[in-house]
Length: 432
View 1: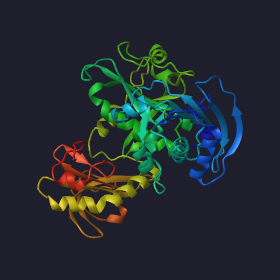
View 2 (view 1 turned 30 degrees about the vertical axis):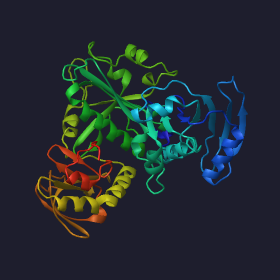
View 3 (view 1 turned 180 degrees about the vertical axis):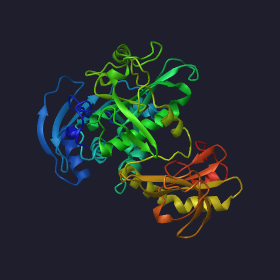
View 4 (view 1 turned 120 degrees about the vertical axis):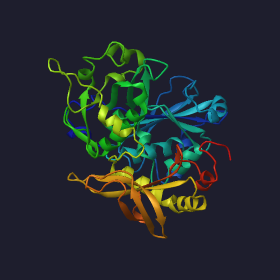
C-alpha cells in the first residue's frame, strides 16, 4: 500500500527493502550472465541490466542491478559464499550445510500490492535450478521448494498475506503462565506500514494476542493504519487503538519487556526496526484518572481466544482462503459423511456487510449437505440479530472456510492433512 496518505506517526522514515537469501547446491561460482539468461527464460521476458557492481572479494563473485518487466523498483542480485544461517528447518539443515554459494536478492516492495510483488521477488530469487530454499531475511522464515512451487507461486492465488510478516514473542519468564509477553511483528515496515506490537500481555493470553496482530496486519495492508488513538474495528464490536510505541512504554512495568534498552539489545540491525515506526495495539480508552496509561486490549484478546471468534479479514485474504476452501470442500464433505461418529464439519460463510462495508464471517455447524451447498446452525450470534443456533442455508460457491473437528483437534483447507486421512483417525503431523 502507499503510505503517503498515512498519519505522520506511521509513515516510515526511510524505505525498508525486502531481502532474500537462496542457498544453492552448486560446487563452483557461475557468471552473472548465465544466471540472467536463465532468469529471462523463467520469466519469459527480457531482463534489463542497469549496472554491474564491483566485487569486494572472492567471497562475493558478482553483484548486478536489474529491472524486470512488471516492476518499477530495481532489483539487486548477488552471488556470495554461503554463510552460517540460523533457524534452518530440520528438513533443510543437511542440504544447506553443504551449500557453498548463495544468491542474495534485495529490492523495495511495490506498495500497491506488496503480497503479489513479494511472490514475484521469490520467483526471481529462486530462478536458478539449483535453488534449495528461500530465506526471507526480514521475517526469518524459510520456504522450501515444494512450498514455493505449490503455494507461493500459485498463478491463481498468489502467496498468502502472512508471508509479509511474522509475529515474534519475547517473554520475561520461561514459564509463560508466570510472566508477561512482548509480541511484535517483523516485515510490515517494508510494506510502508508501522510494525505492530502488544506489550505486557499475560503469557497465557499470548496465542490469542498473536492472532490479533495477524488479523490487524492483514486489514492494514488493505485499509492503511488509522490515526493514533482512533478506534479501529477488527471484528464485530471489537475495537482497538494504535499508539506510537514511545508513548505506550512511558508507564511500562519495570518487570516487563519492551523499553528502549530492550529494543537496542534485541536487534543488531542498522537501522534498528524495533525503534522505527511502530504501533502498540491498545484498548480504545487509556486507564487512570491522574495519568493516562495505555494498556493491552483485554476484551479483544478474550474475543480472539475463542475458536469460533468472528473477525474481519481483508478482501485479498477472504478471496484467497475462499478459493482454497472451495477447492477442498467436496473432500471435506466426503470425509465427514464417511465417518460421522465424533467428526464435526464446520463451514465459514459470509453473513453480510456492516455500515462500513466490512463483511462479517461466521461459522456454522453443518447438518446436511447437497451437491450445491447445505444447511447448518450458527455457532454464535450475529450483529444482524440472528442468534446462535439459527438455521442457515448456504451454497458451496459462497463458503470462505471449513473445519473438520474431532474433540480438541481440527484441520482446515490450508492444513497439509488429507481430510480422508483425518477421518480415519490420522492426527495432523503424524506420519502416513
